[in-house]
Structures are given as structure tokens and as C-alpha cells.
Image 1 (cartoon, helix red, strand yellow):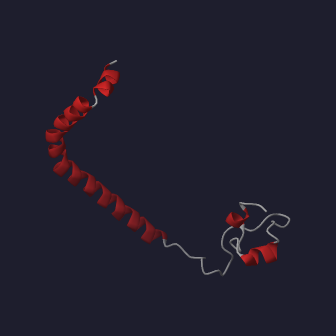
Image 2 (tube, rainbow, N blue to C red):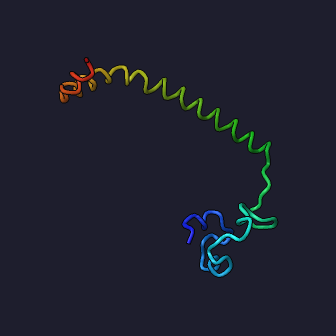
Image 3 (cartoon, one colour):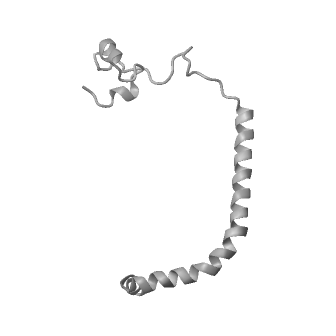
Length: 99
């Protein structure tokens, strides 16, 4: 029994697969991907996909800019204090970092 058979078999490793395939690929192996007319066959609207991609990139950029404006000043203020607390609690790590 091939443990990877169900990854490539169109029957998806079900009991039907064992009946139909004998759990072994036939000569030439199994066909991968959806068959013509399957419910999984879809058409991709490239213009809609490009518009969605552009919108997601713009949103990501705006989020990064907002985070830099709002969290940046807070991090600058509290980071040194928290770093010092950590180093005080773990002096052996501080010694390793120094050299």
C-alpha cells in the first residue's frame, strides 16, 4: 500500500479508491488535478484578481504605516526598560552576548 497514493488519486484515498484502483496507480499513474466538467473546475477572472491584489497591497501598506506611527513611539519609550529588566533577570545571557 502506497502511503502517498491518496495525495494523487482522484478518488482521494476512499474505500472506492481501493475498489477501483486496488490502491495502486495504473500504468502511467493517476491523473492529477480536476477533470473537465468537475465541480472544482473554475475560471479565474484575472482583472478581478489583479484588483483584489492591488487592494490587499494598499491595505497592507496603510497598516504598516499606521503601525509605525502609533506603536513606534511607544516602543521607543518602553523597549529600553524591558530590555534592561530582561538582562537583569538573565545575567548569564548578558555575559554571553558581550563576548
